[in-house]
Length: 97
Image (cartoon, rainbow, N blue to C red; front, side):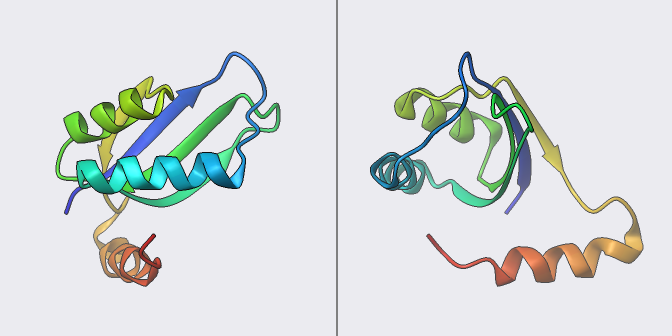
């Protein structure tokens, strides 16, 4: 399945509760989207997230339903042929949520 990097810009610092995360996970599952990993900027107003999804449209649909931004959605892969196996192993090792 394709992997995407999503940049999200928030008007205020991000502060998600456990309930927020569970709701987002449910919505993602409904759209066939699987979260892999996120980075949070030092000012807590931007996230950079890796997701597996059937398409960029599925990510945007899930974001809309969860009322979170999806400002930039880019399909990504390993940066070099040598890293393809490492990237795939890492993605496969992520627990299902």
